[in-house]
Length: 557
Image (cartoon, rainbow, N blue to C red; front, side):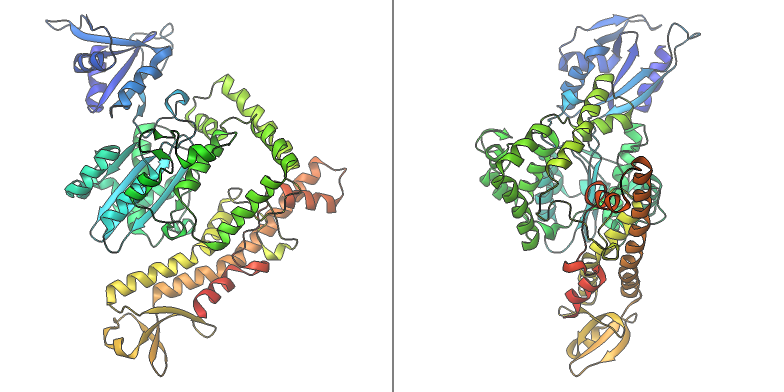
Protein backbone atom coordinates (compact mmCIF):
# COMPACT_ATOMS: atom_id res chain seq x y z
CA UNK A 1 0.00 0.00 0.00
CA UNK A 2 2.80 2.44 0.86
CA UNK A 3 4.52 1.63 -2.43
CA UNK A 4 1.32 2.56 -4.27
CA UNK A 5 1.00 5.74 -2.22
CA UNK A 6 4.49 6.81 -3.26
CA UNK A 7 3.69 6.06 -6.90
CA UNK A 8 0.61 8.28 -6.73
CA UNK A 9 2.54 11.03 -4.94
CA UNK A 10 5.18 10.93 -7.67
CA UNK A 11 2.46 11.69 -10.25
CA UNK A 12 1.13 14.64 -8.22
CA UNK A 13 4.21 16.17 -6.56
CA UNK A 14 2.69 19.66 -6.35
CA UNK A 15 -0.44 18.48 -4.49
CA UNK A 16 -1.37 17.34 -1.03
CA UNK A 17 -2.32 13.71 -1.69
CA UNK A 18 -5.44 12.66 0.26
CA UNK A 19 -5.18 8.86 0.23
CA UNK A 20 -8.39 7.04 1.20
CA UNK A 21 -7.97 4.38 3.88
CA UNK A 22 -11.34 3.21 5.19
CA UNK A 23 -13.14 6.13 6.78
CA UNK A 24 -10.15 8.48 6.59
CA UNK A 25 -8.06 10.33 4.03
CA UNK A 26 -4.46 9.91 5.11
CA UNK A 27 -1.30 11.88 4.32
CA UNK A 28 2.26 10.63 4.75
CA UNK A 29 5.83 11.94 4.89
CA UNK A 30 6.23 15.62 3.83
CA UNK A 31 2.50 16.03 3.20
CA UNK A 32 1.74 14.86 6.73
CA UNK A 33 4.34 17.14 8.33
CA UNK A 34 3.25 20.25 6.42
CA UNK A 35 -0.47 19.39 6.41
CA UNK A 36 -0.63 18.81 10.16
CA UNK A 37 0.61 22.38 10.72
CA UNK A 38 -1.78 24.03 8.26
CA UNK A 39 -4.86 21.99 9.24
CA UNK A 40 -3.97 21.74 12.95
CA UNK A 41 -3.95 17.93 12.96
CA UNK A 42 -2.17 15.49 15.27
CA UNK A 43 0.94 14.08 13.62
CA UNK A 44 1.36 10.35 14.19
CA UNK A 45 3.36 7.61 12.44
CA UNK A 46 2.95 4.28 10.65
CA UNK A 47 5.26 1.33 10.02
CA UNK A 48 6.02 1.16 6.31
CA UNK A 49 9.04 -1.12 6.00
CA UNK A 50 11.54 1.71 6.52
CA UNK A 51 13.91 2.04 9.51
CA UNK A 52 11.69 4.81 10.92
CA UNK A 53 7.93 5.14 11.07
CA UNK A 54 6.44 7.28 8.30
CA UNK A 55 4.97 10.59 9.53
CA UNK A 56 1.19 10.38 9.13
CA UNK A 57 -1.97 12.42 9.70
CA UNK A 58 -5.55 12.06 8.49
CA UNK A 59 -9.00 13.60 8.27
CA UNK A 60 -12.44 11.88 8.39
CA UNK A 61 -13.94 11.43 4.92
CA UNK A 62 -17.29 12.96 5.97
CA UNK A 63 -15.66 16.27 6.95
CA UNK A 64 -12.99 16.43 4.27
CA UNK A 65 -14.42 19.64 2.74
CA UNK A 66 -13.43 21.66 5.80
CA UNK A 67 -9.80 20.59 5.54
CA UNK A 68 -9.66 21.00 1.76
CA UNK A 69 -10.90 24.57 2.22
CA UNK A 70 -8.05 25.36 4.59
CA UNK A 71 -5.53 24.19 2.03
CA UNK A 72 -6.92 25.76 -1.13
CA UNK A 73 -7.57 29.08 0.65
CA UNK A 74 -3.79 29.26 1.05
CA UNK A 75 -3.15 28.42 -2.61
CA UNK A 76 -2.46 24.68 -2.29
CA UNK A 77 -3.82 21.90 -4.51
CA UNK A 78 -5.35 18.64 -3.25
CA UNK A 79 -5.37 15.35 -5.15
CA UNK A 80 -8.15 13.01 -4.00
CA UNK A 81 -7.07 9.36 -4.24
CA UNK A 82 -10.24 7.31 -3.78
CA UNK A 83 -10.95 3.62 -3.19
CA UNK A 84 -12.35 2.30 -6.47
CA UNK A 85 -13.78 -0.93 -5.05
CA UNK A 86 -15.39 -2.24 -1.89
CA UNK A 87 -12.59 -3.24 0.54
CA UNK A 88 -14.76 -6.12 1.80
CA UNK A 89 -14.86 -7.62 -1.70
CA UNK A 90 -11.32 -6.78 -2.81
CA UNK A 91 -8.72 -9.48 -3.15
CA UNK A 92 -5.39 -8.19 -1.96
CA UNK A 93 -4.65 -4.48 -2.24
CA UNK A 94 -7.73 -2.29 -2.69
CA UNK A 95 -7.66 -0.53 -6.07
CA UNK A 96 -7.22 3.23 -5.69
CA UNK A 97 -6.95 6.08 -8.16
CA UNK A 98 -6.85 9.88 -8.19
CA UNK A 99 -10.34 10.89 -9.23
CA UNK A 100 -9.88 14.67 -9.09
CA UNK A 101 -7.43 17.43 -8.31
CA UNK A 102 -9.03 20.28 -6.36
CA UNK A 103 -7.45 23.68 -6.93
CA UNK A 104 -8.58 27.18 -5.89
CA UNK A 105 -10.26 27.67 -9.28
CA UNK A 106 -11.90 24.24 -9.66
CA UNK A 107 -13.97 24.01 -6.49
CA UNK A 108 -17.56 22.74 -6.90
CA UNK A 109 -18.33 21.86 -3.29
CA UNK A 110 -21.22 24.00 -2.03
CA UNK A 111 -19.66 24.56 1.38
CA UNK A 112 -16.50 25.96 -0.19
CA UNK A 113 -18.19 28.47 -2.52
CA UNK A 114 -19.79 31.88 -2.17
CA UNK A 115 -23.30 31.36 -3.58
CA UNK A 116 -23.49 34.94 -4.88
CA UNK A 117 -20.11 35.01 -6.61
CA UNK A 118 -18.57 33.07 -9.48
CA UNK A 119 -15.41 31.08 -8.80
CA UNK A 120 -13.33 31.70 -11.91
CA UNK A 121 -10.30 29.81 -13.15
CA UNK A 122 -8.35 32.06 -15.53
CA UNK A 123 -5.94 31.19 -18.33
CA UNK A 124 -3.59 33.80 -19.83
CA UNK A 125 -1.56 33.27 -22.97
CA UNK A 126 1.16 35.91 -23.40
CA UNK A 127 2.19 36.48 -27.03
CA UNK A 128 4.39 38.99 -28.83
CA UNK A 129 1.53 41.25 -29.89
CA UNK A 130 -0.81 40.98 -26.93
CA UNK A 131 -2.62 38.50 -24.71
CA UNK A 132 -5.26 35.85 -25.04
CA UNK A 133 -7.32 35.06 -21.99
CA UNK A 134 -10.07 32.63 -21.08
CA UNK A 135 -11.95 31.97 -17.86
CA UNK A 136 -14.35 29.32 -16.64
CA UNK A 137 -16.49 28.59 -13.61
CA UNK A 138 -16.68 24.80 -13.39
CA UNK A 139 -19.42 25.09 -10.77
CA UNK A 140 -21.78 26.71 -13.31
CA UNK A 141 -20.39 25.72 -16.74
CA UNK A 142 -19.61 29.28 -17.83
CA UNK A 143 -16.69 29.50 -20.31
CA UNK A 144 -15.49 32.70 -22.02
CA UNK A 145 -12.46 33.90 -23.97
CA UNK A 146 -11.09 37.12 -25.40
CA UNK A 147 -8.02 38.94 -26.71
CA UNK A 148 -6.20 42.14 -25.81
CA UNK A 149 -4.16 43.98 -28.42
CA UNK A 150 -3.05 47.54 -29.12
CA UNK A 151 -1.27 50.04 -26.93
CA UNK A 152 -0.41 49.19 -23.30
CA UNK A 153 -1.92 45.70 -23.38
CA UNK A 154 -0.42 44.91 -19.96
CA UNK A 155 -2.53 47.56 -18.23
CA UNK A 156 -5.65 46.49 -20.13
CA UNK A 157 -5.01 42.85 -19.16
CA UNK A 158 -4.69 43.66 -15.47
CA UNK A 159 -7.85 45.78 -15.55
CA UNK A 160 -9.72 42.88 -17.18
CA UNK A 161 -8.39 40.38 -14.65
CA UNK A 162 -9.48 42.67 -11.82
CA UNK A 163 -12.99 42.70 -13.30
CA UNK A 164 -13.05 38.90 -13.60
CA UNK A 165 -11.71 38.35 -10.09
CA UNK A 166 -10.26 34.82 -10.54
CA UNK A 167 -9.13 32.66 -7.64
CA UNK A 168 -6.58 30.84 -9.79
CA UNK A 169 -4.66 31.55 -12.98
CA UNK A 170 -2.63 29.30 -15.28
CA UNK A 171 -0.29 30.74 -17.89
CA UNK A 172 2.47 29.99 -20.38
CA UNK A 173 6.17 30.54 -19.80
CA UNK A 174 6.28 33.94 -21.55
CA UNK A 175 4.08 35.59 -18.95
CA UNK A 176 6.47 34.61 -16.15
CA UNK A 177 9.20 36.54 -17.97
CA UNK A 178 7.13 39.73 -17.60
CA UNK A 179 7.99 40.52 -14.02
CA UNK A 180 5.50 43.35 -13.46
CA UNK A 181 2.51 41.45 -14.85
CA UNK A 182 3.53 38.30 -12.98
CA UNK A 183 3.76 40.05 -9.62
CA UNK A 184 0.44 41.84 -10.08
CA UNK A 185 -1.24 38.57 -11.00
CA UNK A 186 0.25 36.83 -7.98
CA UNK A 187 -1.19 39.58 -5.78
CA UNK A 188 -4.67 38.95 -7.22
CA UNK A 189 -4.86 35.14 -7.28
CA UNK A 190 -2.97 31.87 -7.16
CA UNK A 191 -0.73 31.78 -10.28
CA UNK A 192 0.75 28.63 -11.78
CA UNK A 193 2.93 28.05 -14.83
CA UNK A 194 1.79 25.39 -17.31
CA UNK A 195 3.70 23.75 -20.20
CA UNK A 196 3.81 25.85 -23.37
CA UNK A 197 2.64 22.79 -25.31
CA UNK A 198 -0.96 23.03 -24.03
CA UNK A 199 -1.22 26.59 -25.38
CA UNK A 200 0.12 25.68 -28.83
CA UNK A 201 -2.51 26.87 -31.33
CA UNK A 202 -3.10 23.63 -33.24
CA UNK A 203 -3.28 21.56 -30.06
CA UNK A 204 -5.54 24.10 -28.34
CA UNK A 205 -7.84 24.13 -31.38
CA UNK A 206 -8.06 20.34 -31.42
CA UNK A 207 -8.82 20.18 -27.68
CA UNK A 208 -11.69 22.64 -28.06
CA UNK A 209 -13.13 21.01 -31.17
CA UNK A 210 -13.04 17.60 -29.52
CA UNK A 211 -14.71 18.85 -26.32
CA UNK A 212 -17.51 20.70 -28.12
CA UNK A 213 -17.77 18.00 -30.81
CA UNK A 214 -17.47 20.44 -33.72
CA UNK A 215 -15.40 20.44 -36.89
CA UNK A 216 -14.60 24.16 -36.71
CA UNK A 217 -14.59 26.92 -34.11
CA UNK A 218 -16.14 29.44 -36.52
CA UNK A 219 -19.53 29.15 -34.86
CA UNK A 220 -18.13 30.42 -31.56
CA UNK A 221 -16.92 33.64 -33.18
CA UNK A 222 -13.25 33.10 -32.31
CA UNK A 223 -11.88 31.74 -35.60
CA UNK A 224 -9.87 34.93 -36.13
CA UNK A 225 -8.67 35.11 -32.52
CA UNK A 226 -5.61 32.82 -32.27
CA UNK A 227 -4.45 34.11 -28.88
CA UNK A 228 -7.92 33.59 -27.37
CA UNK A 229 -8.02 30.05 -28.80
CA UNK A 230 -4.60 29.27 -27.30
CA UNK A 231 -5.75 30.51 -23.88
CA UNK A 232 -9.10 28.66 -24.07
CA UNK A 233 -7.55 25.42 -25.29
CA UNK A 234 -4.89 25.56 -22.58
CA UNK A 235 -7.59 26.14 -19.98
CA UNK A 236 -9.69 23.23 -21.24
CA UNK A 237 -6.65 20.93 -21.19
CA UNK A 238 -5.86 21.95 -17.62
CA UNK A 239 -9.45 21.24 -16.58
CA UNK A 240 -9.41 17.83 -18.23
CA UNK A 241 -6.13 16.95 -16.51
CA UNK A 242 -7.33 17.98 -13.07
CA UNK A 243 -11.06 17.20 -13.07
CA UNK A 244 -10.87 13.70 -14.61
CA UNK A 245 -14.32 13.88 -16.21
CA UNK A 246 -15.92 14.92 -19.47
CA UNK A 247 -16.97 18.40 -18.24
CA UNK A 248 -20.22 17.89 -20.14
CA UNK A 249 -21.85 20.88 -18.43
CA UNK A 250 -19.47 23.26 -20.26
CA UNK A 251 -21.51 23.38 -23.46
CA UNK A 252 -20.34 26.53 -25.23
CA UNK A 253 -17.52 29.04 -25.54
CA UNK A 254 -18.56 32.70 -25.52
CA UNK A 255 -16.36 35.46 -26.90
CA UNK A 256 -15.82 38.49 -24.67
CA UNK A 257 -16.59 41.75 -26.47
CA UNK A 258 -14.75 44.36 -24.39
CA UNK A 259 -16.36 47.16 -26.39
CA UNK A 260 -19.81 46.11 -25.12
CA UNK A 261 -19.15 47.32 -21.58
CA UNK A 262 -17.37 50.23 -19.93
CA UNK A 263 -13.69 49.68 -19.20
CA UNK A 264 -12.88 50.55 -15.59
CA UNK A 265 -9.34 50.48 -14.24
CA UNK A 266 -8.33 48.95 -10.94
CA UNK A 267 -8.35 52.21 -8.95
CA UNK A 268 -11.72 53.30 -10.33
CA UNK A 269 -13.34 50.00 -9.34
CA UNK A 270 -11.80 50.23 -5.90
CA UNK A 271 -12.84 53.83 -5.24
CA UNK A 272 -16.38 53.36 -6.56
CA UNK A 273 -16.82 50.33 -4.26
CA UNK A 274 -18.95 48.54 -6.85
CA UNK A 275 -18.81 45.00 -5.52
CA UNK A 276 -16.00 45.26 -2.97
CA UNK A 277 -15.72 47.77 -0.16
CA UNK A 278 -12.42 49.46 0.55
CA UNK A 279 -12.75 48.41 4.20
CA UNK A 280 -15.35 45.64 4.10
CA UNK A 281 -14.05 43.55 1.17
CA UNK A 282 -16.12 41.47 -1.26
CA UNK A 283 -19.90 41.75 -0.88
CA UNK A 284 -19.59 43.84 2.25
CA UNK A 285 -21.68 46.81 3.29
CA UNK A 286 -21.25 50.21 1.64
CA UNK A 287 -20.95 48.65 -1.83
CA UNK A 288 -23.29 49.23 -4.73
CA UNK A 289 -23.94 45.48 -4.87
CA UNK A 290 -25.00 45.42 -1.21
CA UNK A 291 -27.40 48.31 -1.71
CA UNK A 292 -29.03 46.88 -4.85
CA UNK A 293 -29.15 43.19 -4.01
CA UNK A 294 -32.75 42.15 -3.44
CA UNK A 295 -32.38 38.95 -5.50
CA UNK A 296 -34.05 35.71 -4.46
CA UNK A 297 -31.72 33.17 -6.07
CA UNK A 298 -27.98 32.55 -6.08
CA UNK A 299 -28.05 32.70 -9.89
CA UNK A 300 -29.67 36.14 -9.69
CA UNK A 301 -27.03 37.40 -7.25
CA UNK A 302 -24.23 36.30 -9.57
CA UNK A 303 -25.94 37.92 -12.55
CA UNK A 304 -26.42 41.19 -10.67
CA UNK A 305 -22.75 41.23 -9.69
CA UNK A 306 -21.81 40.71 -13.35
CA UNK A 307 -24.11 43.55 -14.46
CA UNK A 308 -22.49 45.92 -11.97
CA UNK A 309 -18.97 44.84 -12.94
CA UNK A 310 -19.75 45.30 -16.66
CA UNK A 311 -21.71 48.55 -17.18
CA UNK A 312 -23.33 48.50 -20.62
CA UNK A 313 -22.30 51.01 -23.29
CA UNK A 314 -24.78 50.27 -26.09
CA UNK A 315 -27.73 52.64 -25.74
CA UNK A 316 -30.28 50.17 -27.12
CA UNK A 317 -29.13 47.46 -24.68
CA UNK A 318 -29.30 49.95 -21.80
CA UNK A 319 -32.83 51.02 -22.70
CA UNK A 320 -33.95 47.43 -23.12
CA UNK A 321 -32.74 46.55 -19.64
CA UNK A 322 -34.27 49.69 -18.15
CA UNK A 323 -37.63 48.90 -19.75
CA UNK A 324 -37.61 45.42 -18.20
CA UNK A 325 -36.69 46.80 -14.77
CA UNK A 326 -39.38 49.47 -15.02
CA UNK A 327 -42.06 46.93 -15.95
CA UNK A 328 -41.32 44.81 -12.88
CA UNK A 329 -40.87 47.81 -10.59
CA UNK A 330 -44.18 49.40 -11.58
CA UNK A 331 -46.21 46.19 -11.25
CA UNK A 332 -46.19 45.31 -7.55
CA UNK A 333 -48.53 42.33 -7.87
CA UNK A 334 -46.52 40.72 -10.67
CA UNK A 335 -43.24 41.33 -8.88
CA UNK A 336 -44.52 39.90 -5.59
CA UNK A 337 -45.77 36.72 -7.27
CA UNK A 338 -42.54 36.32 -9.18
CA UNK A 339 -40.45 36.69 -6.03
CA UNK A 340 -42.57 34.04 -4.28
CA UNK A 341 -41.76 31.50 -6.99
CA UNK A 342 -38.10 32.49 -7.31
CA UNK A 343 -37.69 32.06 -3.56
CA UNK A 344 -38.33 28.32 -4.05
CA UNK A 345 -35.66 27.88 -6.72
CA UNK A 346 -32.28 26.44 -5.71
CA UNK A 347 -28.99 27.01 -7.53
CA UNK A 348 -29.82 25.08 -10.73
CA UNK A 349 -26.50 25.96 -12.40
CA UNK A 350 -24.41 24.45 -9.64
CA UNK A 351 -26.74 21.48 -9.19
CA UNK A 352 -26.24 20.67 -12.89
CA UNK A 353 -22.45 20.78 -12.44
CA UNK A 354 -22.82 18.13 -9.74
CA UNK A 355 -24.60 15.92 -12.28
CA UNK A 356 -21.63 16.27 -14.64
CA UNK A 357 -19.20 15.45 -11.82
CA UNK A 358 -21.29 12.51 -10.59
CA UNK A 359 -21.45 13.99 -7.09
CA UNK A 360 -25.13 14.89 -6.93
CA UNK A 361 -26.78 13.41 -3.82
CA UNK A 362 -30.45 12.56 -3.08
CA UNK A 363 -31.04 15.89 -1.35
CA UNK A 364 -29.67 17.73 -4.41
CA UNK A 365 -32.00 15.73 -6.66
CA UNK A 366 -35.01 16.83 -4.61
CA UNK A 367 -33.79 20.44 -4.71
CA UNK A 368 -33.47 20.28 -8.49
CA UNK A 369 -36.91 18.71 -8.81
CA UNK A 370 -38.51 21.41 -6.67
CA UNK A 371 -36.75 24.11 -8.66
CA UNK A 372 -37.92 22.75 -12.02
CA UNK A 373 -41.50 22.68 -10.77
CA UNK A 374 -41.38 26.47 -10.48
CA UNK A 375 -40.61 27.04 -14.18
CA UNK A 376 -44.24 26.69 -15.26
CA UNK A 377 -45.60 29.11 -12.62
CA UNK A 378 -42.83 31.62 -13.41
CA UNK A 379 -43.72 31.51 -17.11
CA UNK A 380 -47.38 32.02 -16.24
CA UNK A 381 -46.56 35.09 -14.12
CA UNK A 382 -44.47 36.80 -16.82
CA UNK A 383 -46.64 35.74 -19.77
CA UNK A 384 -48.17 39.23 -20.06
CA UNK A 385 -44.89 41.16 -19.79
CA UNK A 386 -44.13 43.32 -22.82
CA UNK A 387 -40.55 44.58 -22.42
CA UNK A 388 -37.90 43.48 -24.92
CA UNK A 389 -36.06 41.56 -22.21
CA UNK A 390 -38.97 39.11 -22.12
CA UNK A 391 -39.70 36.56 -24.83
CA UNK A 392 -41.18 38.19 -27.91
CA UNK A 393 -40.95 35.77 -30.85
CA UNK A 394 -41.69 36.96 -34.35
CA UNK A 395 -45.16 35.97 -35.65
CA UNK A 396 -43.60 34.90 -38.96
CA UNK A 397 -41.01 32.12 -39.08
CA UNK A 398 -39.25 33.87 -41.97
CA UNK A 399 -38.24 36.67 -39.60
CA UNK A 400 -36.19 34.29 -37.42
CA UNK A 401 -35.51 34.60 -33.70
CA UNK A 402 -37.85 31.71 -32.81
CA UNK A 403 -35.53 29.13 -31.23
CA UNK A 404 -33.91 30.04 -27.94
CA UNK A 405 -30.11 29.96 -27.70
CA UNK A 406 -28.83 26.79 -26.06
CA UNK A 407 -31.51 24.54 -27.57
CA UNK A 408 -29.64 23.57 -30.76
CA UNK A 409 -25.90 23.81 -31.32
CA UNK A 410 -26.07 24.64 -35.03
CA UNK A 411 -28.57 27.44 -34.36
CA UNK A 412 -26.19 28.85 -31.76
CA UNK A 413 -23.26 28.67 -34.18
CA UNK A 414 -25.15 30.37 -37.01
CA UNK A 415 -26.49 33.02 -34.65
CA UNK A 416 -23.00 33.68 -33.33
CA UNK A 417 -21.76 34.14 -36.90
CA UNK A 418 -24.42 36.79 -37.51
CA UNK A 419 -23.97 38.39 -34.12
CA UNK A 420 -20.17 38.49 -34.31
CA UNK A 421 -19.97 39.78 -37.88
CA UNK A 422 -19.26 43.36 -36.81
CA UNK A 423 -16.56 42.20 -34.42
CA UNK A 424 -14.91 40.07 -37.11
CA UNK A 425 -14.85 43.01 -39.50
CA UNK A 426 -13.50 45.29 -36.78
CA UNK A 427 -10.75 42.75 -36.04
CA UNK A 428 -9.83 42.54 -39.73
CA UNK A 429 -9.67 46.33 -39.92
CA UNK A 430 -7.49 46.56 -36.80
CA UNK A 431 -5.06 43.91 -38.04
CA UNK A 432 -4.79 45.42 -41.51
CA UNK A 433 -4.17 48.89 -40.12
CA UNK A 434 -1.44 47.53 -37.85
CA UNK A 435 0.25 45.40 -40.53
CA UNK A 436 0.12 47.98 -43.34
CA UNK A 437 0.52 51.18 -41.37
CA UNK A 438 -2.45 52.67 -43.27
CA UNK A 439 -4.18 54.47 -40.41
CA UNK A 440 -7.22 55.70 -42.37
CA UNK A 441 -7.99 52.30 -43.90
CA UNK A 442 -11.71 51.52 -43.75
CA UNK A 443 -14.11 48.69 -44.60
CA UNK A 444 -17.17 49.34 -46.77
CA UNK A 445 -19.88 47.37 -48.53
CA UNK A 446 -21.73 47.56 -51.84
CA UNK A 447 -23.96 45.19 -53.79
CA UNK A 448 -21.48 44.73 -56.64
CA UNK A 449 -18.55 43.08 -54.83
CA UNK A 450 -19.58 42.99 -51.19
CA UNK A 451 -17.17 44.03 -48.43
CA UNK A 452 -14.02 45.92 -49.46
CA UNK A 453 -11.02 47.73 -48.02
CA UNK A 454 -10.76 51.37 -49.09
CA UNK A 455 -7.36 53.09 -49.29
CA UNK A 456 -6.90 56.79 -50.06
CA UNK A 457 -4.56 57.68 -52.93
CA UNK A 458 -1.85 58.95 -50.59
CA UNK A 459 -1.42 55.46 -49.06
CA UNK A 460 -1.69 53.31 -52.21
CA UNK A 461 2.07 52.75 -52.15
CA UNK A 462 1.70 50.86 -48.83
CA UNK A 463 -0.86 48.38 -50.14
CA UNK A 464 0.44 44.78 -49.68
CA UNK A 465 0.65 42.28 -52.52
CA UNK A 466 -2.32 40.17 -51.42
CA UNK A 467 -4.83 43.04 -51.85
CA UNK A 468 -6.89 42.53 -55.01
CA UNK A 469 -7.90 45.83 -56.66
CA UNK A 470 -11.64 45.98 -57.43
CA UNK A 471 -12.52 49.64 -58.02
CA UNK A 472 -10.80 52.97 -58.64
CA UNK A 473 -12.37 56.16 -57.30
CA UNK A 474 -11.30 59.79 -57.61
CA UNK A 475 -9.55 59.87 -54.24
CA UNK A 476 -9.28 56.19 -53.28
CA UNK A 477 -8.82 52.59 -54.37
CA UNK A 478 -10.96 49.67 -53.22
CA UNK A 479 -9.57 46.18 -52.60
CA UNK A 480 -10.67 42.76 -51.40
CA UNK A 481 -8.72 40.02 -49.63
CA UNK A 482 -9.36 36.25 -49.31
CA UNK A 483 -10.05 36.66 -45.59
CA UNK A 484 -12.59 39.43 -46.18
CA UNK A 485 -14.41 37.38 -48.83
CA UNK A 486 -14.51 34.36 -46.51
CA UNK A 487 -16.08 36.43 -43.73
CA UNK A 488 -18.54 37.95 -46.18
CA UNK A 489 -19.64 34.52 -47.38
CA UNK A 490 -20.21 33.31 -43.83
CA UNK A 491 -22.16 36.43 -42.86
CA UNK A 492 -24.44 36.47 -45.89
CA UNK A 493 -25.21 32.74 -45.87
CA UNK A 494 -25.50 32.22 -42.11
CA UNK A 495 -28.76 34.14 -41.70
CA UNK A 496 -30.44 32.34 -44.60
CA UNK A 497 -29.45 28.96 -43.17
CA UNK A 498 -30.44 30.07 -39.64
CA UNK A 499 -34.00 31.00 -40.65
CA UNK A 500 -34.45 27.71 -42.52
CA UNK A 501 -33.12 25.64 -39.59
CA UNK A 502 -35.27 27.49 -37.05
CA UNK A 503 -38.33 26.70 -39.15
CA UNK A 504 -37.43 23.00 -39.20
CA UNK A 505 -36.85 22.88 -35.43
CA UNK A 506 -40.03 24.82 -34.73
CA UNK A 507 -42.02 22.24 -36.71
CA UNK A 508 -40.41 19.42 -34.73
CA UNK A 509 -41.22 21.07 -31.39
CA UNK A 510 -44.76 21.92 -32.49
CA UNK A 511 -45.40 18.33 -33.60
CA UNK A 512 -43.94 16.91 -30.38
CA UNK A 513 -46.13 19.27 -28.35
CA UNK A 514 -49.13 18.11 -30.36
CA UNK A 515 -48.47 14.47 -29.48
CA UNK A 516 -48.27 15.39 -25.79
CA UNK A 517 -51.40 17.58 -25.88
CA UNK A 518 -53.63 16.27 -28.69
CA UNK A 519 -56.63 18.14 -27.30
CA UNK A 520 -55.15 21.48 -28.25
CA UNK A 521 -55.75 22.98 -31.67
CA UNK A 522 -52.87 23.40 -34.06
CA UNK A 523 -53.08 27.16 -33.84
CA UNK A 524 -53.06 27.09 -30.06
CA UNK A 525 -50.09 24.73 -30.04
CA UNK A 526 -48.11 27.03 -32.30
CA UNK A 527 -48.76 30.07 -30.16
CA UNK A 528 -47.90 28.26 -26.95
CA UNK A 529 -44.63 26.82 -28.24
CA UNK A 530 -43.50 30.04 -29.89
CA UNK A 531 -44.39 32.13 -26.87
CA UNK A 532 -43.14 29.93 -24.06
CA UNK A 533 -40.92 26.98 -24.88
CA UNK A 534 -37.89 28.06 -26.91
CA UNK A 535 -38.56 31.56 -28.18
CA UNK A 536 -36.43 34.65 -28.15
CA UNK A 537 -36.48 37.25 -30.81
CA UNK A 538 -32.87 38.19 -31.41
CA UNK A 539 -32.77 39.45 -34.99
CA UNK A 540 -29.91 41.88 -35.38
CA UNK A 541 -32.02 44.57 -37.08
CA UNK A 542 -35.36 45.99 -36.00
CA UNK A 543 -38.60 45.00 -37.65
CA UNK A 544 -37.30 41.57 -38.67
CA UNK A 545 -34.31 42.85 -40.66
CA UNK A 546 -31.77 40.14 -41.39
CA UNK A 547 -28.34 40.24 -39.74
CA UNK A 548 -26.72 40.55 -43.16
CA UNK A 549 -28.82 43.65 -43.97
CA UNK A 550 -27.95 45.12 -40.57
CA UNK A 551 -24.22 44.74 -41.21
CA UNK A 552 -24.49 46.14 -44.72
CA UNK A 553 -26.06 49.24 -43.23
CA UNK A 554 -23.38 49.39 -40.54
CA UNK A 555 -20.45 49.33 -42.93
CA UNK A 556 -21.96 50.57 -46.20
CA UNK A 557 -23.33 53.96 -45.21
